[in-house]
Image 1 (cartoon, rainbow, N blue to C red):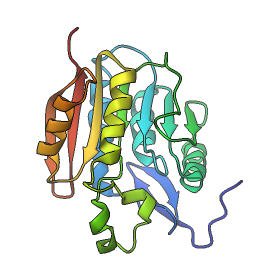
Image 2: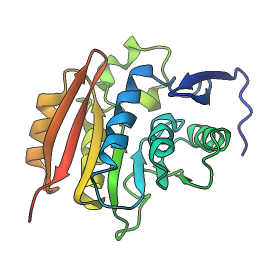
Image 3: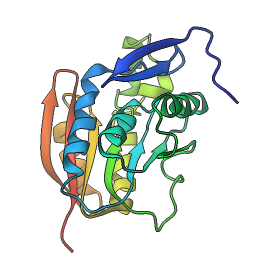
Image 4: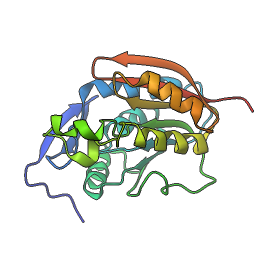
Amino acid sequence: MSVQPADPRTMLFDGLEIAYDQHVLEPRPWTIAQAEWVAEAAAEVPPGPMLELFAGVGHIGLAAARRRGRILVQVEIDRWAAQFAHLNAETAGLSDLVEVRCAPVESALAPDEAFPLILADPPWVDAELVHQYPADPRLCIDGGADGLQLVRAALEVIGAHLVTSGLAVLQVGPTQVPAVREAVEGLDTGLSICEVREFNRGALVGLTRRPA
């Protein structure tokens, strides 16, 4: 399948021309902060590829990959959004660095795959509140009964695939940091929170692996 949107749109995101349409989540400009954080950390973590979970149309991971030139694996369950991620990598001239996997995050990776840098942008809107965002496709924002169902899934994948001395940056809702702290402490993932950066429209949670 190739992307042939009926209502194509583009926007500039960190200097990249990003294509999307009404069937996917429109890129949020503030999320460049997530790409910037990962790109900053790239100088301090071990070598190796980056992983982006819940990649959408791929803009955040592409911005980070372009800044550092690392291989990027993007995981996105929605086939249409994954096609946009392919297209946006091609437009950015980054196809040689980017692999897009259209699959659930829980089954997209082999057990032995490991990454020093991971980005994750799971849907985090409480299912009962999704109706407040009619312009956004439900699949892209529905985080389940408490808004944290897919956040927990992301934490499990990060815990299984983040290398020691690596960094993961998880994007969540602006009021969800306390609940994410509880989730990190309650799940047996070996992760700990190293830093939180808060914004009006969301929060970024930095995660590292606890020493064994």
